[in-house]
Length: 470
Ligand code: SF4
Image (cartoon, rainbow, N blue to C red; front, side, top):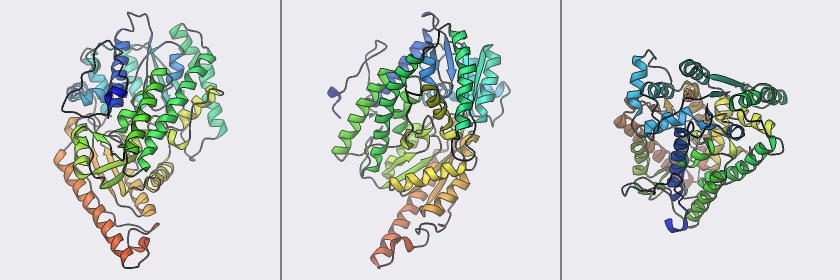
């Protein structure tokens, strides 16, 4: 890709240096700049006389927080950035020494460890203590316990937005009204009081107009993976694409510009018939198309991605790339109904969906993206994603007839990434996909109905081959 066509702003006043041994799309560099800029804003928040908020990615009410001029911190993003920079291992062990159990979500322990180590953020800048913890409770119980812990340590206030779980697989009007009522009566008055800024609903509408543009472009990028070859990787590559919109930038003109640039770049790759760019270089022949469920491992992110690159495997869609919003299922922020749309956004988060909805979603991806199968990366310390994943695996196999496999790693705890084990399991899985494809082809050539082969017939139970890394 020709970098000369892409504007590369340097928002923190430093030139962009691209290491020669790592390949990234231009938009990936731009994303990195945005994330770094947010850390700089956090570091200078006190000097700039700004109040600081912390909130989680699923249920992130970024447009609302911007209405009160908060500098915005996202604890999961801090943990994963520390994980990618190989800093999280010590933080987790420090938190364990301080009494946190081995089973606690490692994002939480990395956050607590960062606090114990002097609150230096991933980029080396100091992290300010939040003035308010905005707890949008969207399905993961850990969110509540996490903010309970740090509220004590920071001595700051929490404002909770209780989001009802989608137990029936749909959003009922009373659920939406309940969330709007809390926004009006509790959340907005609290944010006004802490920030000293009066709420202006027209300001919220304006941010949402920007959000919609970015959401449209993001969906076009993610859905480009329906094309063969896919111009993107919908898991490893997608984590760069979702960065700005899932964090402190949704609703800003910078995010709108980022997604405009990204979409143009990806559409050009699609037009040229190119596959994804990976850190190892351009993806060669696309041999396998997969759907992945579960968050990635961050401490060995590049090594993990390389295992797929080496096999010619492209992830065409993933549930993790929807963790901060299900835009590809049609949701858009609505400037005409701003509070209702914030409520629907929170209610529709992936972490707030029941198991049948998650299964439907994965089956739909396998069908629409013509995937060869499903891979589940089960995260040892994330109960929210891991609960029910074996059931998901069996049900998806039964409904699609496509092979599914299960590996186990962790988010930011380097002790739980066993490269040899994961590689071994992946190789077995790709072998299984190949065998099923060969058998299906042989059946088709022999004049049989392609779907009539055992395990490939829609609705038939495919043989379950457990591929578990630990
Ligand atoms: S348990 Fe999972 S969903 Fe919940 S905070 Fe930890 S990583 Fe996020």
